[in-house]
Image 1 (cartoon, helix red, strand yellow):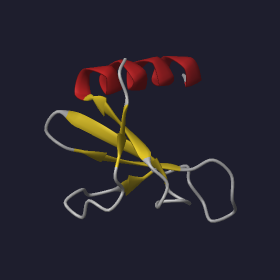
Image 2 (cartoon, rainbow, N blue to C red; image 1 turned 30 degrees about the horizontal axis):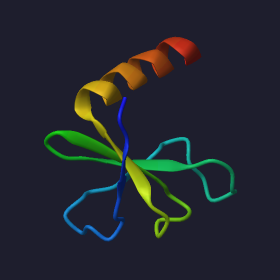
Image 3 (spheres, helix red, strand yellow; image 1 turned 90 degrees about the vertical axis):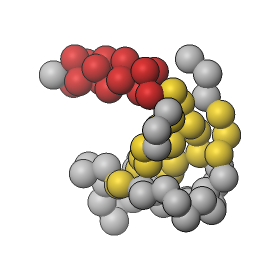
Image 4 (cartoon, helix red, strand yellow; image 1 turned 45 degrees about the vertical axis):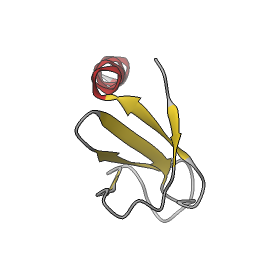
Length: 70
């Protein structure tokens, strides 16, 4: 899987915060999908560079995460 660093200033992306995120601290992520990539960043430090992965790689990751938590 290849992950690219992305700029967080792209206002064209609609960022969606994880439903497991809270204001109490801890690990929080948010994602923004576009046509061919899914962007991932730290929701508590949005100025920090995030990652962009291919849509297929994201699908595999989510499937794995669902089975692991399941």
